[in-house]
Structures are given as C-alpha cells and as structure tokens.
Image (cartoon, rainbow, N blue to C red):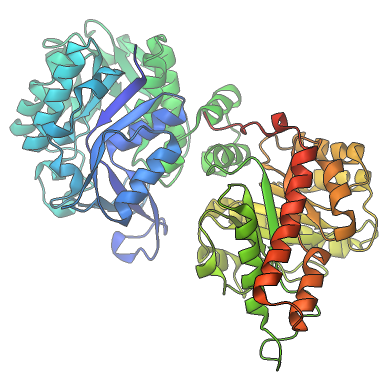
Length: 634
C-alpha cells in the first residue's frame, strides 16, 4: 500500500524575485523570497492540490536551508528525503521580470547542496511507498545526481511504480552558455540528448516544451522529435505550448500536432512565465495520478499554469485546490488574473500559516494613569509592559493558543517576545476620530519592517451617529490597511469599538456587512461583549455570510466585573475563538505597582492568575467540539 502519491527528485533553491517589474536585474532594489527549483515547485504545487508529495534533495545547514525545510513542511510536503548538507550552501536564484518575453536570472549553484545529491540519498523504502517518482533533466547533468536518479528509477520500477520525466532543460545548468545565460531555454547539445536517451525508455510520462522535446530527441522539429521519442518509449508524452495550452500523445504520433489531443490554453495576461511549467505539471499529475482522462488532466494543468503565469513568484503563488476549483467553475472577469479580488482572497486564506483554534491574549499596554518614563520614584512604562508579557508567558505555561496584543506603537518588546506566542501589534493612533494609521508616512514601508508572523491590529470606533465624513474617512483608512496586508501576505485583526455607547447588535452586524462590501476582510475580528448569545449569532452571521474563511472573533474584555459573564455568553458561538483581556483587568495591578505597593514578582503573579481565571471560565463554558481544525487549502 502506498503512503505517498509523488516523490520529486533534484533541484531545490531559494528564489529571490525582483519586485520592480520592468527593471533590469542590475536595477532591482528589493526582492521577494520563495522556494524554487523544478522538483520542489512540483512537490509544493502537488501538495496544494491535495496530493501526498515528498522531495528528495539537499539543503545547507544555514538559515536558507532551514527556510526551505520549514516552508516545505508548512505546505504539507514530506521532507524525509531532504538531507541537510553541513559542507555546502543552499542554492540561490536571482530573477527579474523585464516584460512578458524577458526574464533575466542568475543561478548561484557553485558546489551547492543539491548538486551533491548522490545514491546514498535514495531510500528504496521511501521510493517504494510512492505511486510515482519524478526525475528531472537538470540533475542528469551531474554525475552524482544522475546516478542517484537512475537508482531511484530502478527502485520505482522494482516496486511497479510509475516514472515521470520532466525534461527541465536549462542550458546554463549543463555548463552551456556561461553564467549570464540563465534566461536561455534552448541550445543544441549532443551530451544532453545522450544523457536523456538513457532515461526515456524507462518512463511512463514525459513532459516538456517543444524545445525540451527537441533536446531530448536530438531533432529540431517537433513532430520528428516526438516520433523519435515514441520510437524508444511507450510513455504518454505531454508537449507544453505556453498560451496555446498543450498536446497529449498517448499512442502513435499523428501527421500533425493538431490531429492529436489538443487542449487549448486560456487567454490571460502573461506576467511571469518562470515556474508556470512546474505549476502545469502539478496540475496534470493531479488528474493523471487519479486516473482521470488525459483531457481532464490537461485542463487542470492549463488552469494551474495560467494562475501561476499571472503572478510574480513561483511555488508560493501556485494555486490551492479550492482556488483551482473556483477558477475552473467560474473563470474570471479579469484577463490579468492577479487583479481578481476573489481569487486573491481565496489564495491568501488557503495558504495562510497555521494558527491555534483558540486564542487567549492579553493586551500589553500601559493604563492612562501610568506616569511617563523617567518619573522619579516610579517604574517606566516599558518595564510594566515587560511584566505584562511575563504574566502571559506564565499563564500559558508552554501551552499553545496564548498571545499578546502590543497596543504600544513602539517596538521595544520585539526581542522579549517568546516564539510560541501569537502576537499582534497595533497600527492605529489610539483614540483618533476619524481613524488614523500610525504609519509615520508610509504604511507599506512601515509594515515591510515587521516580522512576517506578526498580526496587524487596528481598532476603529463605530457609532451610529457618526457624520458621513467621519465614516468615509474610516473606510478609506481601513481599505488602505486591507490592501497593504493583502499585498504583503499579512494577517490582520480589526477591532470594532463602540466607546461608551451600548453596542446594538443589529447596527453592528450591518456595519460588518458594509465593510465586507468594501472588500475589507480581516483575518480576525475583535468585538466587545454582546448582550447575549443571540446577539453574538447576529454578528457572526454577518461575518460568515461574507467570508467563510474568517479565522474567528475575539472578545475584547475591558471590564473585569463583567468578564466572566461576557465569556460565558460568547463561548457557545463557534466562530468566537477566544478573547483579548486588558483594561480594568490590569489597571489595579498597574496602580499598585506604580505606587510601590507590589513588587515585580507579585504583579506578574497577580496578572497571570487573573488571566488564568479567565481561561478557566472560557474552558468551562466552551464545548470542545466547536474548536475543530479550520478549513485548509487542500
């Protein structure tokens, strides 16, 4: 019985994509990072479509290697075959996008980790556990890599598994054309043809562009190349033709390509072709390994390639299964698919990092009565925030699902934050009416400097009698924040405050729906306690009707006297996922500490005890069945 659907073998790199589209690589100023390399891309793309995939390769024992390992695991790719090489660095690739035909790139692969792949890296038991093994042309350019892949083919055939060849021809990786020829896709080479000739007869599926089929056959005419390949193998041959789609040949090669099974492509804007072929192959394998008709496999492949070619990065922007289903069923009104708001939202929510099902957080701020830093005879606000953070850590006692909301605009606590905590940080100016974002000039630049796993928090006051000008200004600020978080792949928490007014659930629900209509879709909502369970359900219905992928609602607790009652009311609603405690819950401790009546140890213990008491109230009121794992991309 197989445990895996697919094992990919060969290249894995960290790709650094120039973000200034239209620039020469010489002029690029900033780069976006992702996992790259054909086999790694296919493994990730397949995992996103629900296949059980694995990668056999090597990475360095350094931060880039650890990034690759962690990202593969986040994607659901099995990493048992991914070795850490203590002697070599992870491969790097620098790329830019000039236009739809020019994509300058440089491979940094001198003695890199994956180039040291050898037969010792091939675990026959692992190979035998998969339904198919994918070997890639580039690694036949290296003696050790070639032997390793041939061993993998032997093991696959011995276990009656399928062998797939992605020709994956990059002349520069065969030493043809020099370092500056990374963009080149074709150059004649008898050496390459000879190396691939030994592989073709043993394959069940061969995939390549027309140029790649030419190099595999040693013939520079597509039909003649296909006939040459067919003369040595019964494999299904898939010819990728970019915007024109693909041709699938399962039997004899006809007199013309158009007489074969031609599955047309989609008319979409080409933004970056790099990696699109890997997304295509992942889509084809989704159908092929399920026994689907070749036409259906090709339809999935073309759609995956179209979504990938419309975006900047490689694997990190490949589609998930839900995203692909949506696209196939509904298409898009945008020729530039990267501008499709619904597709972008689906992509973002199905590729988010995992989060705990329940969050119990403490708002780390300083009550208004706290003296300014340096006041004689008092502790500093910074020190009190550190004590609050200690209290959260003590209450968590190593358990997941605890966090801190940093309401202070400064960043003094960054080094003290435990990695196990969920952490959010405020981006608004406290008490501003209308809402102002504390961006220091540019919100995008400000958030670029934040750690990627830091959740953005914004509190917006909403009152039914707000003048239209105030409401419109609030909405503009929230729309700007939503756009920046979406562009940077950041999660954000929108807290709605009613001030001293008693929140009206119907009015609040209408406001939530209004924000959704403006494409303001936060990952989390922070709402003040509602009057009863029915009121909670009214608000939650407004959320779920507009965004079934919202992570949840957190109850914002400011009043210690009502905290237990508020949690009991909220705990029965599935989408309410926890709470953020603060306000009067810590005010007494702050006042006593400021007056010198409580030592640091005592104030930490007191706040931790209060937080633990709220956690217990929540646990007693909450049905654990409401905290099932949230829907994923697969």
